[in-house]
Length: 145
Image (cartoon, rainbow, N blue to C red; front, side, top):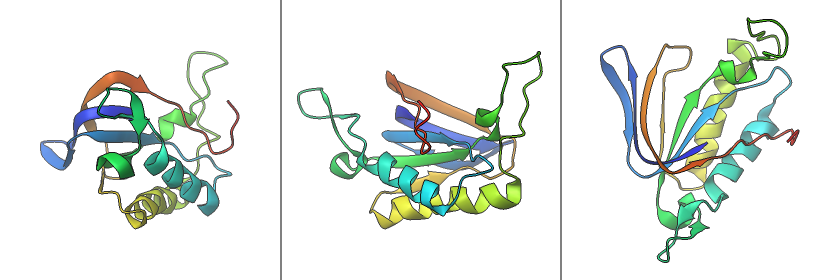
């Protein structure tokens, strides 16, 4: 997840999503992830206090600041590069499992009252963003780190 001033997601020459200030989440779905993980991730993203308050401190959530959440599916986040030179993606969920869970993250965030934009699942996307801070955090519903 990155705090952004703005972001745009394109597939080829087509702009599929644009947003102003908020959070851009690159979401990887593991083979053993389920609906509870998607709901927990959405909850964490909308309540995480990493947006600036009037004093310039990271003290406000998307809900408090009125920011937008951008969601981009990215199976390569599950790439295991510990051995050799070619990452293994065996821990990544299949598209049939991952796509509905990414959609659920977006739906749950909307249910919390946050504006949400998204990329196109499975497409080769160009993600243009202005990282504000920079602020980048790793979130893991399995809490392995």
